[in-house]
Length: 233
Length: 351
Figure 1 (cartoon, chains in turn cyan, purple):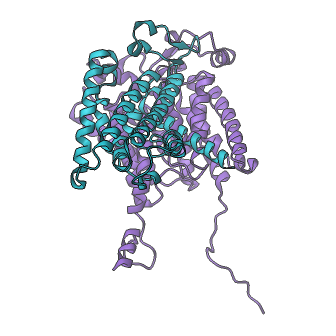
Figure 2 (figure 1 turned 120 degrees about the vertical axis):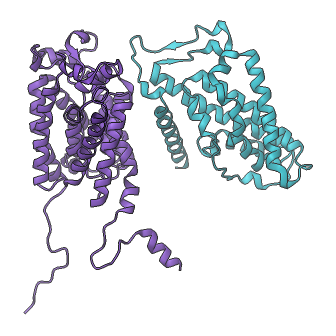
Figure 3 (figure 1 turned 180 degrees about the horizontal axis):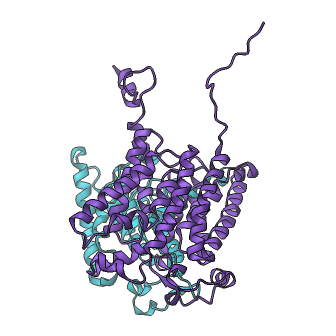
């Protein structure tokens, strides 16, 4: 389940800096959302990314859980960065992340058991999601708290956007709907949020099945590369 | 006096892609005609519609990729892909299912990988796999064949069924399962194989005709040296051995080798699909391993898998293994003692 961690982050090299200068903030935001997007560029955390994006709401649920975990873990690790010896940093990161994920897992089980049962094993597995430990090592352990927190949030948001885009795409092609099962997350008033695009749509089962996740992911990465190429010109 | 000096190779064959593809198309004709005789217009409509879509999508892909259009269309490979895909689908497929299958075959499996010659997977089988995964119901609806006494739909009726979007015919009344499907459901329900083979609906005989017709085309390809004997022989041989062993072990619960070889698309697959020059293994030993593994996987997937036939999945699995097989089975270079594996060369350099 653990992907290899590739650290390619120029910001990580800067050890100390101001709290968050506007330009740096902008760079952190743009890196998280686009240039160094965890899903599309770093290709980290592919396992949950491919596994739970059967529809829009599942993607959103896992995305929000990831945002909370990333922001919290980055903040705590940045806060304690001067007191943790280098030799034990990795077990320390894992402990911090595991504690946060346990909290999220239990609260989700308490407040939204349906969503918890849908996402199932993938909530505890956030612990092994390489985006989180990757950001802890590459960024949070070298930057002050505000920047680390912002980076965590933005990386999480970028990951969520990919989850939601892929989930929406697969749901639309596979079922012809969007926002089905919204009630699982937003309560019973959301039960009529489902948008049905075609009256008599049979659905392309492939998109919902695992191969559809790989194909859709490939197309998303290709689209990002096309946009980047157009922007360069 | 000056002599004309040539460089090697001194013997050339004037074969090129379009000649090879033309031979394949010729070889497909007997099998196609036999299927037409047994299943009626649905087969021909499938083939024609698939070819139209394939040529249109190929042209579109070439325009988008800014490649010359006519030279690539003349290589006829899109037509062969479409034809093979159409033959492996049940007759009277709705046109939009054909379009989806051809789209995945031509655009995704071929052009996204860089066009003909760069595709690691057999395009027609990618199209088939997408369809069987996405439309399991439609993909198992074979119409009742004329051999069993029912009347086949006429040309006009067939066209109506293929192109109408609303008036879906009453499939249950006019369709039946293929022998493979029939046997699989029967065996799972606990019926003995011999009993299933006695049923009125069981249409193995007509599939034997079809398989023999395809084998005639395959023999033509062998004679023309378009394909080599290794892949068909090892594929059918392995399938026969495995199904034979299991049948001898328990003739009640396992189907006979006869059904496995003639009852589905085995012969079509052995001569036309597994031998695809781009995605198949290229070395003589490699071809034997490749074909034998396909035969093995066909048996395993047919007997213990959930889908009616297994040619597509077996071929696709082995397509993935082709680079590895080719790497380890390179023939001895003339004049050298042992095979020259690239890995050995690298090791030599290091020391």
